[in-house]
Length: 102
Picture 1 (tube, rainbow, N blue to C red):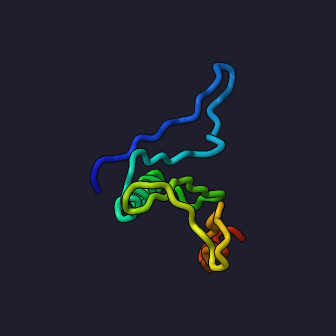
Picture 2 (cartoon, rainbow, N blue to C red):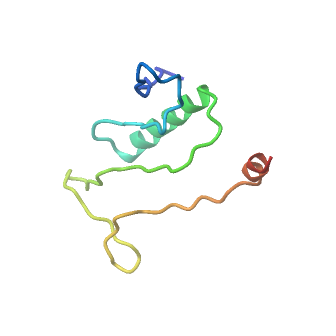
Picture 3 (cartoon, helix red, strand yellow):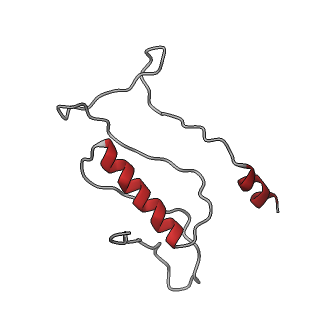
């Protein structure tokens, strides 16, 4: 699978017991083409699977889109309005519904 991605763990205070992190950040540094980005995200997902993560929620990806010459660009929706958020709605699988209902 390749090199394992490091995980930065949440800080604990001296008096607090071991508590799960509120959230986990996946950081992909540098400039990447879309194929490299896809591969990096696949590696991050593989690492989560290695850690036995079954579900995630509240996923946000922040990025700066660049054109072929490396200049920043703005994305537009079908009506020509500038996009600030590109929402992706993924259908919920029946397997997920069964698992969360139990």
